[in-house]
Image (cartoon, rainbow, N blue to C red; front, top):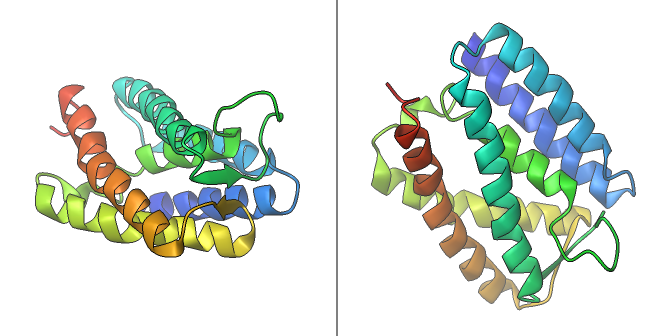
Length: 172
């Protein structure tokens, strides 16, 4: 039951972030993320390292999406300002929300490195294309090239996230 609650919480965060950003309320998703992570930690987390893990992945993910943003590949709705060239807070919230699934609803990926690469390459672009269709992301590359870039980024990120999780000793 906890795994179902965990994945439903992540989807609630994801949709709150996307729809909030697309509709001019970009801080709605991060607020939902904070509330759900408080509930998650209160009921499901037994190791303080998982909090560090979520913070690390939120930071690393923000850097990854900031690099995509700085490359001119994408524009994100809900930016901090036109002068601050960093991925918006709702992007950070989605990375952090995803990190909270790694030791719970996404545990089936543990030690399945090839499956992680494939899942990242397929579902990463799917998420970004959904974000584009909702108006939260604007691509500046062709659809094919955008999909390839995102697919490569997530084919690396997915196993990278699980590697960091393992490094912190959370997958034991």
